[in-house]
Length: 217
Image (cartoon, rainbow, N blue to C red; front, top):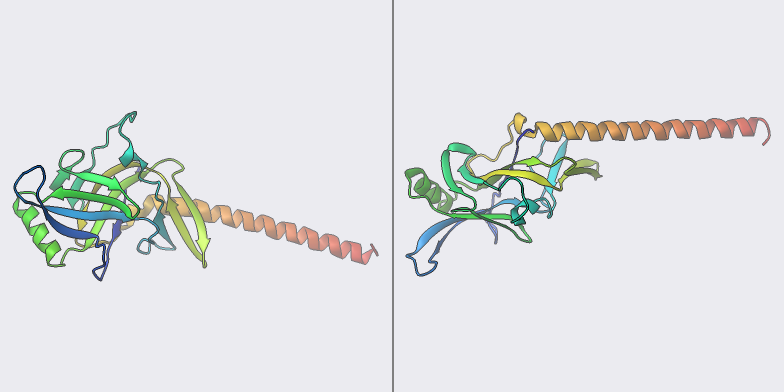
């Protein structure tokens, strides 16, 4: 099953930014700095994926809430720019994730590494503003609709959550949307087939009316 990646980016700082640095003290421990972000926000259109855009359904991240009965444990990593050479945290150890009314929230302490401290500084400076996640959609885990002439893919169930984390350039390489494009092609073909059926049915109805009118019925 192919891996897909989706990113969020906000030009302006909002009341609930995608990325921020928090300083906190827990269980009487010395203060530490945490990277806090949203890998996905519900009901928000993705960047243009080519012929369509995408939204994440609030129920898509059910795997994050699962604690028992899952055959394969959730072992999501936090990575910088999806790069395994820059690991930041790992679930359920140093990486925390939860689903709230906004989306998929993640947080982890700033790693005591050069790239970890650099990342935190870049987030504070507003240089790094994007956030992203890698995932695999469950079979039948997406649906399609059309709004204002635009095709919308809604991801309803994610089967595997591979990584989350900050990204410098929240763009989509073509390979990252291959699965979505295949799903879109199937949706388009289905719509075209349904349209052809309606056209054929309308033609038959017109022919019948012309026949009846011609024969005085």
